[in-house]
Length: 196
Image (cartoon, rainbow, N blue to C red):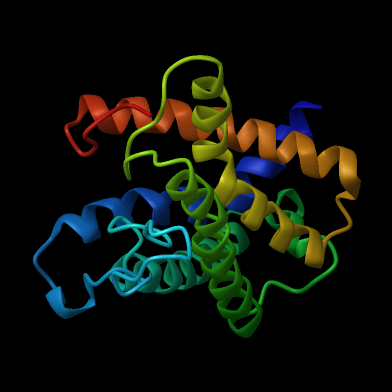
């Protein structure tokens, strides 16, 4: 089990680093024209925003670019360190530049796109972007806020390595818990407005 856990972290290390760097990237003044909401400020049929202001084209682009770059660099590190066998992507595939570009791009897509349904659902419930609600549903949305991107990333891993449903769900759980811990650390470093 420890080896499997280690493989989970080694496989998605680029996604973890990209998520952190993308948060910093989105706070910079670079490429301001891309800081437009993905929903273009449009409302859904219920009169509420589709995704809200926090889902921007700049953030989406950041996930794609950073995940691709980090996946290429991480592939080189895995090969140099002799840990290819501990990366789910390389169990059935060769660690090549093209493969790492493809998986990095797909992880970026999975990360960014799987955050959108959660944002859509929260707007329907009139939850303020970047916030959560109180009461029973708070725990559900705190978990979902941390797990949504992991659902997408782990699904991309499953495309290249047969995780099976059990390991996929463990991946999501471990990823969500890791996300919660990282968010608390980013909050303490003043890179997030709130820990959840």
